[in-house]
Length: 320
Image 1 (cartoon, rainbow, N blue to C red):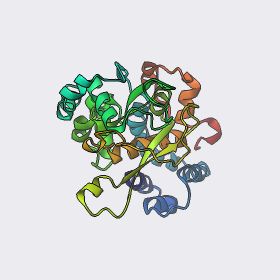
Image 2: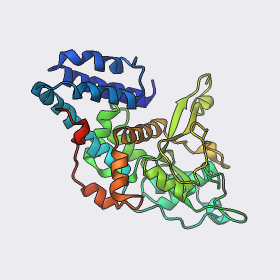
Image 3: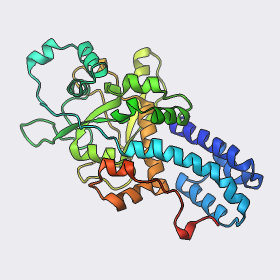
């Protein structure tokens, strides 16, 4: 089962146990989600649950909802807002045309050490160039002249700021059922397996969780080499994003297209799928719309972080 499915199942089970302990009559609403047999899309399921809860006018129900709201607050603060607000400086773009001396003298191992141990962003960017080549996988334009070219940025899949935030790391650990632990994040946050080079507008819209990358495992791998290449990466649109982002929903994104691509790790599938799951939850829950309405597309990172969390629904959908 994909990571996103396991995360949703685990979250659904937790909600089900906490909520139905006091409200056993709503088991039939949560059980299909827990058992992964629900026929609804996430947005439709959420709507059905909301309508059901709105029609239950009891104080006991309000009391029973508190653990659910507490859980939602925890994940909103330490996963959704944290992913929507990467923070930190942008990766510097020194040059998209490294000299032959640099290529000859700096081995991949040294660059990896500089990126992962020294947290050197230019080393990370160079490694991703070597893995994927000097073109944008989304716009298909080159990153360097002559001819038409676009300005590149090195995008982190899981934000670099996650590395030293204990509450975020704890939430990741719980949400992914210990598949993405603090140790995994800290070891790979500035590694090519958590990064890709992309056109600057696409980078900004990726940070705003307007699109994501889905990694699906392919069948038929019979050798270790084939096993490492058995993941297919696809573009997934969450909401309207920059006009320069060309792919259609479901189009394949090709990594390891550079001269030394096979020697450098491709994006970690669980990182891609987690980021995609968070983007979908942001959109389905309406948090994306609230942030866009408050800050537009010039939202300030600090303002979002310092905004008080308000989880109560609008008056027309409030549970009474």
